[in-house]
Picture (cartoon, rainbow, N blue to C red):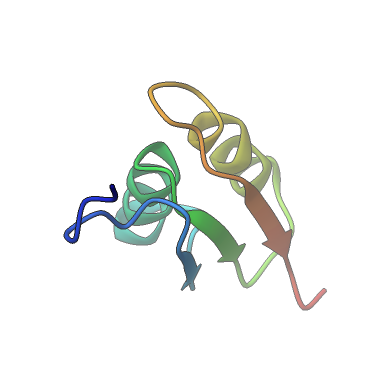
Length: 69
């Protein structure tokens, strides 16, 4: 039986995920088991850190990174 309120397994696109609120949302969603597509205006180590942080426990959704540059 699944929990009706669960967001685990869903997909979210988070823009501005390199830092600030976007980063916090991307990491939080991934840790809740959401598969996150994280975007940032510039390719940087910050956006790659989002994927690493989101893959950590407790549930560890997948993170996919995209940058227009």
